[in-house]
Image 1 (cartoon, one colour):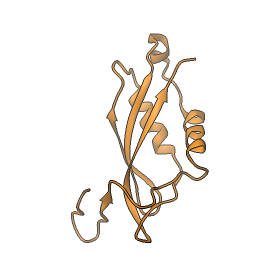
Image 2 (cartoon, one colour):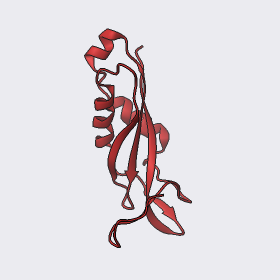
Image 3 (tube, one colour):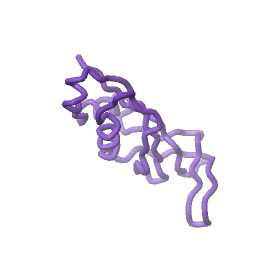
Image 4 (cartoon, one colour):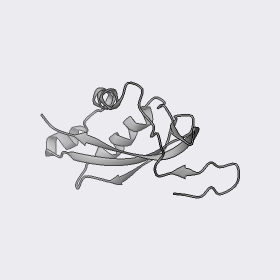
Length: 116
């Protein structure tokens, strides 16, 4: 857990009693990503595939903020940039709750790049 820097900044939790949820559930989340992802052409040509792991904050209003890549694909040729682009497009989540109050939490998400 991270402590707030001042009284105005909410604490960001690693886990909450009720974690944030994408409206429609995980299936809709994966569908959103699959629909919006654009596989980088260079990566297609090189046959690069794999998972890019992104950490973000889902704040107490459900907004996705501060996405960062925590684990990338070797020789990714732009997969990280594309993963972050799509994460920034995500609509608001149903926020997390702890003790009946809406809270901000870290949320980890793998973005899968597979060539068919």
